Image: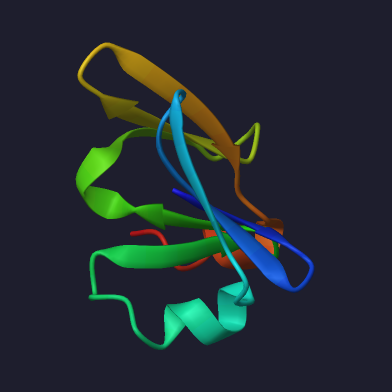
Length: 82
């Protein structure tokens, strides 16, 4: 997933492999393939790793091998999931 932090974005590949780039999420999102989806003002996820979606709790679970990430999903962005 990618986490926005103002003018920077943090690309999280694994807990030990995070890359910081000096681009906003909005800027990065124009260059990403279609499997990436904006789910929150601060987060973009790779749908290939989406394992569950909690519509009540407004969060999604991403799983890569044994690693699990819980990412918040905004109410507005929840409507984009089908």
